[in-house]
Image (cartoon, rainbow, N blue to C red; front, side, top):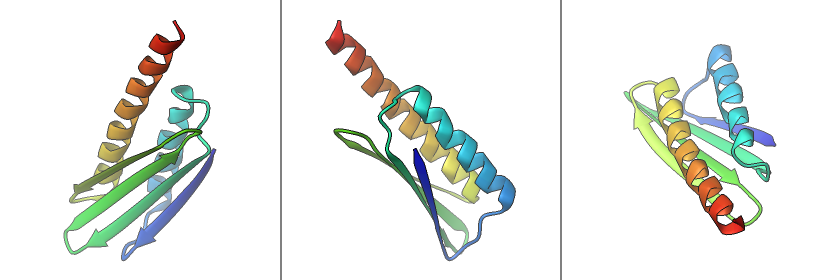
Length: 97
């Protein structure tokens, strides 16, 4: 899985980048067909927006969250994507059985 990180009007520290790498790599346990993960972090005054988009074989999952800090916004968006992946995995398992 390739991970692309883009920042707009802000900078991400090295520890936040490592957090992002570790968090997004966990998604491979839920779906093996993830080709690419895109993270866009935008900073505007006191608000940070994180958007995560995953490209799978048949679909694309997107989550966008806002918070006062970039790490919190990324964590919330990752939680939302993880929930979407869990629902997708359950649907795939139910269909195969």
